[in-house]
Length: 332
Image (spheres, rainbow, N blue to C red):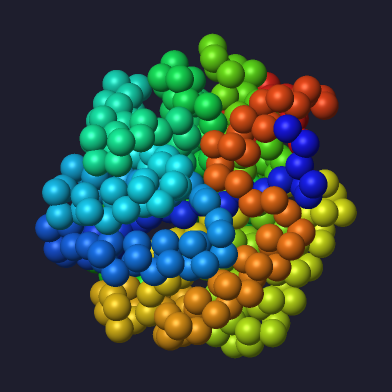
């Protein structure tokens, strides 16, 4: 199929309130407090207004709880793709044994399909957690794509901020989270999509796009952080990022988070996050403008459709992903 504009994809990591509390070391996360009934209608409303279909990466633990089923069914009923975001949302998934990783992914698959009617074909690791074992297991289970790489040099800074605001983490918990948001060398990972060559079955990697050349984050949580100072500067920054994507022929794959639709009045426990002081209605104004800007320049697809389009492309050249020194074939 020919496309009149360059392709792009959009996803939303449906991290629930308890997941942020868990990673932060806050008490009470294991009662699984949820804001899905608030955030899901807000996301669906904006996407419907803009005529967009995207991918929601859902956590298995949320799909396992009946209280969340109505919200999750609404996502599938609106025609959005459902992806797997692990069962337990352990940002240290890469530290688990192969058996534990497969159990987590498979358990999430089962409950997500039961709750939404869709079996996931795409995966994003919590906190961009990834390992060669994860990739092999995804390929063996028939996944079409992974979306867990985040090519930026700023991961350690984001992790340092998280640790600075987390007062209750034990040394063991800090050790588990030592690769949260990735390391400095992740900035050397490929920015454009590629095919992993080391897996038994074909598996496409669609990185979370960062600004070409500079490798600084451009997904919407960062845009909203800048908007807390100046919406004009935030949108100018985003416009520059899209321009560089076009000039470098990078097909952007960007992501949203629930906190992009919430403010501190919706989730006081998460007020420490950047941009949570920005009222949610102002966030939606900025998001609307940014997504319209993106839609004028790119054809925005769910990630599964983007992966299928990429699979039809012949590899341009082969190389290595420096994170694992694993052979790859560049697709775009």
